[in-house]
Length: 243
Figure 1 (cartoon, rainbow, N blue to C red):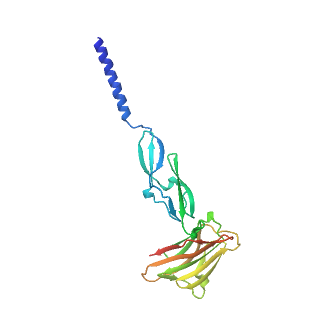
Figure 2 (cartoon, rainbow, N blue to C red; figure 1 turned 45 degrees about the horizontal axis):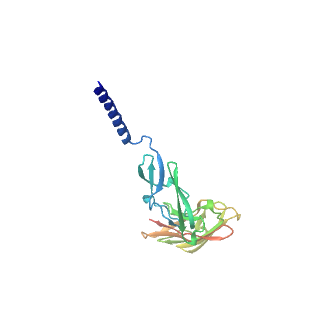
């Protein structure tokens, strides 16, 4: 009887021990995140003006409560505080994941052409209408802008007897003056009619072009200057290739 009792107790103990071992090997069904860190080389320490993050090489190392470490790719919606609008000796971006966040200090280098957030952008429609747009006005009071348009493989489509008709102002409350220096280039100035109402993001002017055969067509906005009424600031040039 004693032997049978001992055998029974040992059998139960072995079953319990086996159950514990199996349970210990199974992954935690409610495993959570314990912490995150940036993988080495995920983000750069120095960016140039208007440069973006290369997300193809940006990864987090995520540690879970069970001790498992996973490599997770960073996406744009995980990043806040990143801007390369203007040069900066020290800026901080934050990368967030699953309620955790990690900060990364970086700096932005560039020329004096990026003294503020204002930018000029150019696009072209199928009917060869070129649109020049302003952006970054939410952080800069733009009361006037001046720039030169230079074209290769195309020319301005306008009535030579009426150079002022070469461009059409799209921004409300703005005056425009045009100086056509040749069929492939012109200078223009736009400024607020009342001297105090700033531009907003969007198309500020349009003009028509005509292409020259099959030659590659390139249009550049250059020598741009924007004014806030207190000073004049250079704006980076913008280029588009038109097929």
